[in-house]
Image: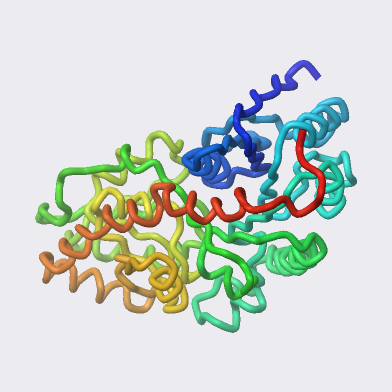
Length: 369
């Protein structure tokens, strides 16, 4: 295939980490950069891309057709990784060499270990989150939706991925605290955000009519259909200016967030995502539905309280009206956002989590060349 990309440079370091293959929300690339903050560590991220991707950066970006069908690329990539890297972090329980090993990450992990590579696993969210478990924990769970045809597939996928994690038996990292309920032995590897583009010197809630932004990546998961009526009514009453935006390229989102007073995150999963971190970094008032388990785990692991204002679809209107009536206390909450984002999500905390995995003794007697 003519569009087979050139191989990425091999890190010039003693410890060399390869992260692949999905880069959801740009996290593979961000974790690679975080790992490079550790003395003696170099890292490379790879992900396959499909039309309509948000354009997050990666060290090696491979068209999905090449990733899935080019045996030449697959064999060359396995040889390059297995002879030049010391560690591999497999994202989302997906194969990292296309169909070379029958799309079986367990076989891939065994092949890598046979070459002396230390393997780790990292789960992002829906790849591991078990719908039946989540449905039992939250009345707002999207997995209650009888018309959502994806639920059986997601259930099968999560159960299969549990088997993959069990069979591989490698250290497991999760990007969100709620996934600890799906894999209790995991370690939290927080999402990483480049905070500088989001920085805003303007405090929120200074306008008479505040701007309320909602930018769902997946409307059903975020609960957009549940909150839209409340927001539309407040907009029509002239109390807020409601802006709902979708499909915005990643590089354009900081401007939208900085121009808002309030950012609405998600109201069904009980977690907070990269989008919330970005809004916290901008010093905006961030509202979302976050389980106590998530808040408690973040506090326990990081020593920082999550400054996301709690609301459910049932309570959102009352919360917004309270913010409109008592703006100063919520400005104070928003003012804690940038410090939280720096402490937990600027990459340093994630680097400290990776340090133990990357600098410990290899899991086999062999070593990467």
